[in-house]
Every structure is written in C-alpha cells, then in structure tokens.
Image (cartoon, rainbow, N blue to C red; front, side, top):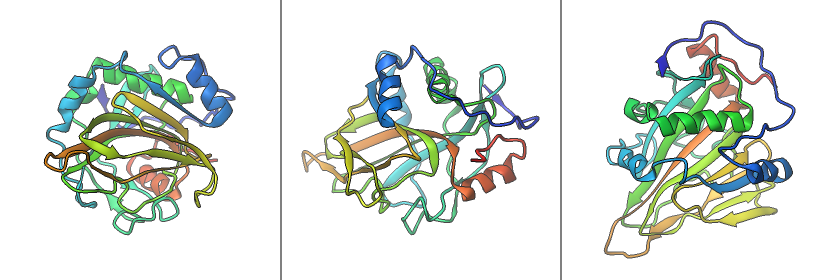
Length: 263
C-alpha cells in the first residue's frame, strides 16, 4: 500500500453495468441490478476475529457522544493496488446529514491503522468492493470503522434518521454485535419512510450493499439484552462516487488530481 498524492486526473468513466465478481457471487450482482441493494455473508473471505481486534483501541468520536470511530480515504491506482489519501476530513452537507453535530462541518478522525489496511484480506476486500461497483482508478473511497458501546439504549445514527450518505455506492459490514437487541437495518424508497424496501438484522460478517443515490437507509436504536453487561455494535462503512458538493469540494482542495463524480 502506498501513501501518495495523485499524479494526474483521469476522466470519470461510468460503467454500463456491474461486472461479475467471484468474491460476491452472481446473486449479489442480480440483487443490485434488480433492486439497488443486496445482503450477503463474507465470513469465508475475511478473518473476522482478527478484524475485531482493531475495535479494542478505537478512539472516541469527538463529534458524536457514545460513538467510536476511525476513517481513511483510499483509492486504487492504475495497477489496481490500494493507496491512501491522508489528512482529508469527512464533510457532509445538511441535505445528507440532519444531525446538528455533523452537518456542514469538517470532521477530522484518526486514520485506520496501517496494520489493518495492509492485511491481505482487507486489501482483497477493498479491491473486490471497487470491482463490484465499477470504481475507476483514482476515485476516492471512504472506509470507516465506527460503532457504539455502553450499558443503556443508544442511537447509532445520533439523530440522522432516514438518510442517504451523499454517494452513489455504499456498503455496511457488521464487525461485532455483542449483547445487543435492536440495531435493525431498514431501507426505504423515500426519505419520509412511507415506502419500505426491506427490514433486516445484519449479523457479524454480513454486509449490505446499497445504491446510496437510489434508496434511503436507517438503523434503529440499540440496547443491551442483559442490563448487567455492557454491549457493543461496530460496523465498517465503505462508500464512493460522492454526490455531495461539500464533500467533493473538500476532496478537491486536499487532492487536486483526484477523480470526482461530475454527474
């Protein structure tokens, strides 16, 4: 993995269809093509217990109470290798984030640990995810680990409610779910939540792929099953091809040669 700035701008090419990728399987391709989302299990592709060890020293989210988080900007080079883009903040405009503590501000987080990003199964996951969505070289990919833990009911979204993240492609992978009730993932056709698409619970190792510009998503509050024991729910979120003008503006300021969505 290389830490570097981009050397030149390549025109953004939008693939006509999702290519077949053995990592995900044919059914995942079909689900996305037909319904703009899919749910699958990747425990055969990753060492989940070892990924879970990176939850032990996640720092607190300074913008959201009772949440822990790291994030990194990544991209694939022309050879298809994973690179990092350092020190760029996360930026969501108010149209994509309703929470007062997160909307229309620059949010800086500690990077994902190099030892995590350098893992072979992490590298393969990122490459397979980029292939699933037809991500081009030098398109910025945001990858984050975040979650909640405690001993009383918490809102994982911290006020966001039903929303989109301001990108075209987004996936949610559950890393841990310990002593938890709640945390149900729901997809909708509309932000008002009048037209529900699916309602499901993701287990550790399961991932939900979403065309973020086509459907809306939410997750319900979580609380402990056993009130005498702490609980936790941690996830990976990975998304790309941003529609949010605020985020694209910040990306361009930090990385002038990055390939951004112009559509």
